[in-house]
Image (cartoon, rainbow, N blue to C red):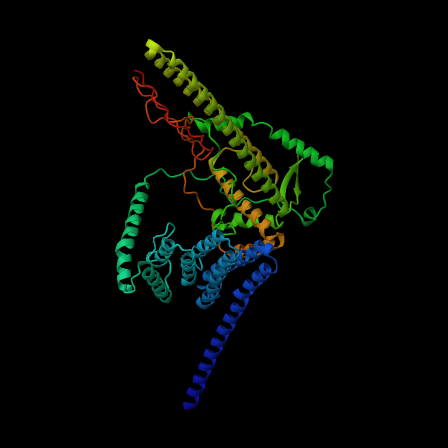
Length: 577
């Protein structure tokens, strides 16, 4: 019996030793694969060899961070299945935090302080490394070195007690007790230096923070919850149309996919001519739908637009959070040229192999069309403002001339001037509204052209021009993902981008399907846009003429779409003896 017990004990210890050895080997593999120092050395060598290679050095950090953050998320999801462990995630989290800090230091070395601040802000908002004390400590230290103690104080408060604009964590972003103690000590040292009070204790600092900051944050959150509850009775948004992701496409044989197509110059000219003819004018049916959507209001630009002026920042580079798993995976495979895109040419449907680079070039061209149209609209608005400004100054000069010779008929002349000014304001308002209506019509035409082009390119959810708000919102999300894709490809290169897309494809294919999120904003086909803002005119601080009812210009500049017109000094008050 004793011999059997001894044998069982030895066998048990042997199993435990093997398990520990396997865990150590797995952790060593993780450390070797996610070696932050290797990335740091590669980027530093790139920049030190040639100062003009700063952008490429930045891309090394950005590409590694994108991949490693995705891998860390996948590891966290695999902990429940036993394929990953908390120790593996902790190792990767430390490596990601180190990369963020060194990425910011690279920008500091290049004297790009704004880029360094943005890097630190991205680090503290990172879903993986954002709760580590290292990134918060380095961020605060950086602001102290920049002689910005108030900003450093806000960073310490965000890390320890919360209260940032994007902070939803009660008790601060940093949860590890050791990291929190180190941050409190650093915060105390900074406050002692600022207040020049070395006798200040940590307990006094905690009490001051609790009374002055935490109470304020809690009041703001309570008010936000009250506001959210007050808006809970709003009518539910209309269900998005075209959300059916299960539509099946006709199967095509490998011989058809690999069939070589000969494209001649005549064929290209023919397709281009047909596209130009199709998009020359808005069809009457489409125009009628826009009029029905406007209702009794003045026409406005399509909202949301397919493209934004600046490159979008995606929370998930794969687009899963924006599009859902299935649609994001479909778009990635299109960019990798793994899903042939159906196209129409010469009235016959055929399967046209469009490479991912071609798709991104088409999307880039559509974005440039939006930018050019914005520039054209801004010039038109500036020209109208300049014209109205000149006419206004000329009119004021005529008013002065009338008053100078009015004599005993002063009141009559003042009334006449007031009437003329009122007519002029109405004329200005009419011209301004005509311009806004024209610009809105042009942007609607542009939207129809872009929808037709992207339909020809074979993108999903594009089926010709439409005014349906739900469909346009889905199309805008697709264009947001593709806009980010062509911008990133131009920054890091085609090979690195394709490698990133391949990794994202593998992850999405192995994950559980996530449906496309329903937009929080209300989306209906027929809605009444807000009324237009009248023409901007100078606003006098005093009545225009003495002895009469004060007349003020009530028009204000239009926010957002156009630059405000030039400002004018207040009108003088004329007095006569």
